Image 1 (cartoon, rainbow, N blue to C red):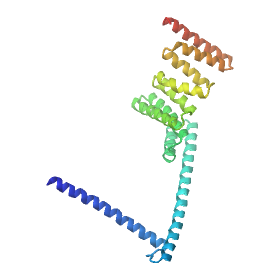
Image 2 (image 1 turned 135 degrees about the horizontal axis):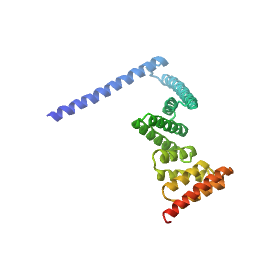
Image 3 (image 1 turned 60 degrees about the vertical axis):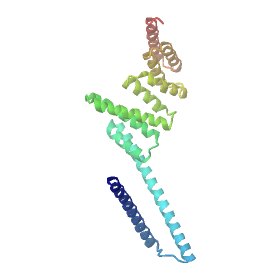
Image 4 (image 1 turned 45 degrees about the horizontal axis):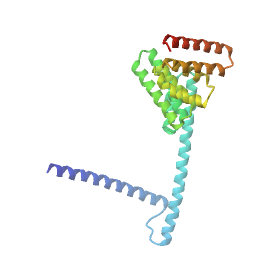
Length: 248
């Protein structure tokens, strides 16, 4: 009996909701009829006239929707501009809020996700300086998620590839996770000097000494700055010394 009562009540609620929805729709339709001057068509001519009026109404609505979307896109652009201005001032928290607001309007923009990741990384450093490890962790996770989302939209997005590699190596201490992103980056931008150096570092940290030495050679060949060549050569020698220490 209890189950029957529950079922009856559920049906009653469903019917009530349906009835309310139907009533609401009828009210809207009635208001539309009044607005368009359509009363109760009976003849072919009256129906054709009603069709013409509603087709015209549909076009107006489409134009309004398009205008609304254009307005939203403009707002997103302004949010991005304001975000960049805040970055120039070093106000990464304020910038982050504007980039997030822009994403609510244009959720498939890889550039916005990159900047969310960038600002989140900076905010993680701020939290670390304050000893707020919980906030630091949350910001780092947000940065990781943002970079991954950017790359899911554009897998060859160089800035996001490098940024997530930096995040994994320097913030999470997970050099092995950084390596695939750097290898992809360098398959796209073969002379990305910062990427080459970071890859050499990550190879070293994962005990891939030969690959690390090769990466430093690659850097030496890619740069024209003699001082940088010397520094890379010195790092390469450290790698080879560590390799010898391990008896390889």
